[in-house]
Image (cartoon, rainbow, N blue to C red; front, side):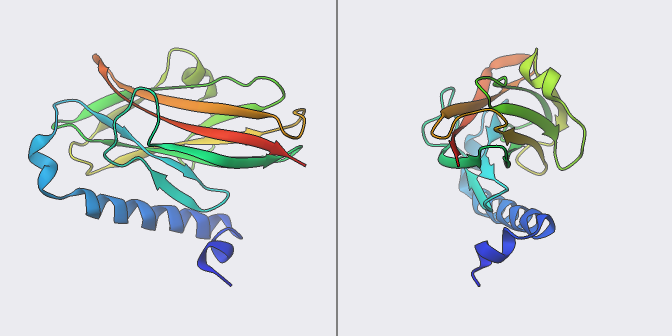
Length: 186
């Protein structure tokens, strides 16, 4: 049995997989480029918890995601899948970030949660934005936005893009974005 197959069988194993990947990404990111950092810069990553895929986008800063998008996410009609958007502070000082995301539509329902908690922050994310406060500088800490995508009424073959944007509070020009292309299957 492959590591991915066994990791996808239990939520705890998937969570451990995500943590291991995130720690590995942080270690590889702590090279000589630290001196070239800007004062304010969110860094979003794109991952798929349901299918144990982590994480695209470390050190890539885009207002419209190109290099940090998962394009082959699937959700069974009547089922759900869980995506994740870890956020790091790639700036030089402690900072807060405003997270905004897509609304539910066309039979695909989106719900946003704070990390692995049951705290539903959907209203804030699709409204003026959910603020993640006081992240330490230089990727010493991270937070995560979890997205539950369900397809209670969408037809098989329907595809939509889910984009999440982070902007620095007080410096909205400093931003990053990730996206997921989700296809409904039978």
